[in-house]
Amino acid sequence: MCTGECSKFIGVILYPFCALCILCNILLFFPGWSTEAVNDPQVKLTPEVLYLGGFLGSGVLVLIPAICIQYTGRRGICNNRFGMLISIILAAVALCGSIYGFVTSLLGLLHGPTCHYRVFNGDMRWTSPFKVEKEFRDLERSYLFHREVWSRCIVPEGVVEFNIIFFSTIMAASIIQVVLCAIQMINGLFGCLCGTCQRKTY
Image: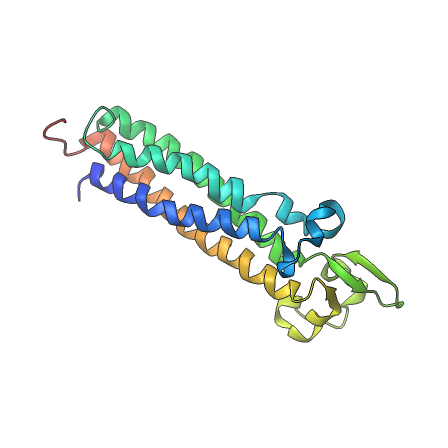
């Protein structure tokens, strides 16, 4: 496969992963399929959701470069050495976006969700319970490996599973984006040095 065709392939392949990350980030605004948290996001939403790692990072910041990268692979004005040079820069931007999406999702997983929680003294409050060390001194590892403590989050119902599923999906999609963007940077470098296999222009 020549460098131009490779660019077109990578650009198209990035689209569904961008869409998946955007969708997951939007759904994270409705934990437990409830709209209650959206009405008071600073208190009731998991902070990492508000960082918009899936929407901006692995979403928009990858989608726009992906569109441009695809065009560098199509026969025409962009399918040349200069276009491949631009694709390296765009792939670097997309790489940064996907890394941002991965890191924010990883933090969301590690810190756990914000929920209505019964603290150790019996009071109920909105908090991120898995960040409170004194609440979980008995856990040798992360809450992720102790399903029995997930039920301590009372509202929204099933919020722990909800966050784990969507943050993990963004992380997985972001890892694939990182790999594809890195490949495109290498492909773009070969395109600059060797050309795009273009024989005729339409």
